[in-house]
Image (cartoon, rainbow, N blue to C red; front, side):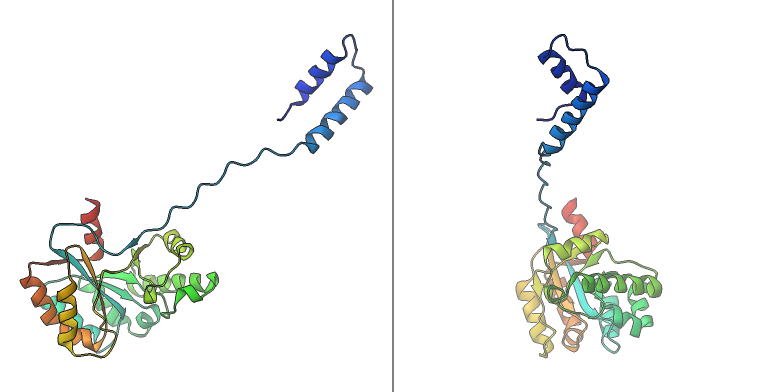
Length: 252
């Protein structure tokens, strides 16, 4: 319980009726008050509410046959062009999660991705496993990539996908402070390992669902299978949107 100086002096006067508080008495009273105030424990601070977890988008809930096809690890000269050609032939826009150092190495190809209407995603600068890095290195991966995007493409990413899908909540909050959302996936093409194109197509077609986020890569297996995969998905009644468009469907 706290007490003010005025309250203390008034209580002193009531306890000593008739006392005329001289300068010395008042000074002594104030000294006593200061010692009491210093000895009193501070009022406990109210408990801090826990931080809300940062959501990781894996899919959206919808009855509509709509999906987002996304591609990681580009731009990769000789491969990304093939993906872009297939997407353009089908009139499809996708989201490309690009690596900063690869944008620096192939800026014209990265510009082509955006120039053809695709959405830019952030996939770090060197593709490390972020959960094994100190905070300073995580910040460096995030900021260096954003800088190269701005310098080379004049654009910023609204979505971030961590390499290997490895991201702690404290790291996700660092992503959110940079005004990016975290995107994962619900269908993994597994095209990062060498395999025949038909296997990639089969895996996607068997696991696709309304509101799916498909994880593809700028790889030979994906490039060889993409045209046929898109044909199968179209025949199944699916339409294709960017990640941001898919997320807006969920919000709407």
